[in-house]
Image (cartoon, rainbow, N blue to C red):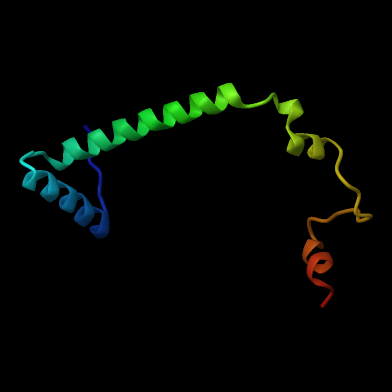
Length: 91
């Protein structure tokens, strides 16, 4: 078992969820609510990731990957230190 600390706002929201469930006749603990939310979100993420993996084109066909493979020359030897000057003008 792990102990977690929620900030005041999150704890209040969790308590509101619990209160709504109690009004609906379902007495549950905060632990049960958090567990259910975690499991449901995990399942949703698994479904999203599976769909993305199956529908994603191979990396070498990705337009962004192709652009990274053959970058456009700006005529600047090192843009990492002077990029702001070239984008926004010299001061």
